[in-house]
Image 1 (cartoon, rainbow, N blue to C red):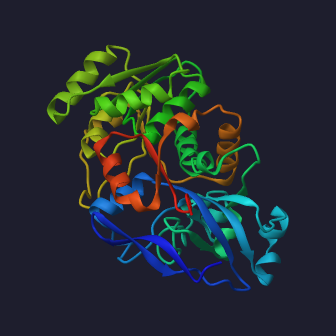
Image 2 (cartoon, rainbow, N blue to C red):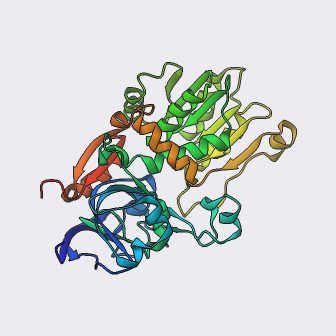
Image 3 (cartoon, rainbow, N blue to C red):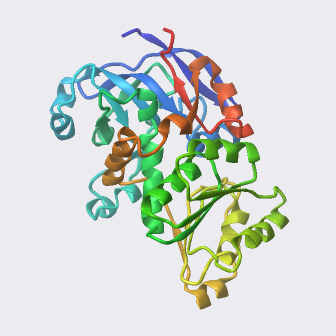
Amino acid sequence: MNKKMLAAVFTEIGHMEVKEVDSPEPTEDNIIIKVDACGICGSDVRVFFNGSDSVKPPWILGHEVAGTVLHIGKRAKEDFYIKNLNLKINDRIILISTLSCGACEFCRTGRENLCINKGLTGYPPYPGGYAQYMPIVDIQFKNIFKIPDNLSAILATLTDPLSDALHGINILDVNLGNKVLIIGSGPIGTMLAALSHLKGASEIILTDISDERLNLSKNALSKFNRIEYYNVPKSLEEQEKYLRNILGEDLPDRIIVASPSPEAQEYSLRLSKKGAKIVYFGGLPPSVKNIKFESNILHYGEQMILGSYASKYEEQKLALKLIVKNMIPADKIINHISELENINESFNLIRSGKVLKVVITPNEGR
């Protein structure tokens, strides 16, 4: 492995500098992979355009990672998870991003996604995948899955975000006959719509303020015939009125807000049927601390407002299986592949709504 590598280094809000940096150092305790592909996540987009208290430049982001194993340290080989996985040099792997300690109350009760001591690959102190090579340390070992031979690294990167969408759908508790409203048709909203369909929802309504993004989602979901698509007005004052009109008197009993919109979180309650479940999926910008809603609607209607964060092991395993079995159209959701040198343009494309899901290939052509 070279002592230098190319990486896209987040240097300031709105810019990454693609440059040579030191390659990760092989040790007896770590694993090093060649990064074959790394998806751009919505949280990366928020950091790129808004900054984050958790990420101080310069830093290498990227946590939807697929790669090839180049090095397994002597002590790393003896780790329980690595031995159980029978991990070897040249194996292709994905790395689920949300890290858990395995010892706190939440980890020990099967809610490892809420780990008190949680970390996240691609955030300090764990360098991310917008680079040719990437180190993996002991807390990340239990997050490794082997990529089956019949699956490309590019499609495998969708495992991480799909597992998050699965977690959200499980919390939403979609069943046969439910009417589901999904606000936001980005990659997560698109996957949530597909999963709602697989769960048996009788009516699925997917909305977005961007007609272009909505059409991308519609194209990706062309085989799912119970999904309706609506381009809502950009004016916040008109959105609720428009949605109420298309929903009619039969309001949805399942709603998921897959958009970083406090207003959507607020009006989702007013659009819900009594007894409905509402999940807030999209994280809000750091500048938004509170939202407002009429608590009497909740009191008299017995709706449940729920949160969804990351995923659990069984959801991660199922996400990979759904991609391998082509039950989720990963090849259509991922509709833009870019080399590392074009990463700034890729982030701007995502913001413009001209692409659905972007994957970076740091070693392509080298």
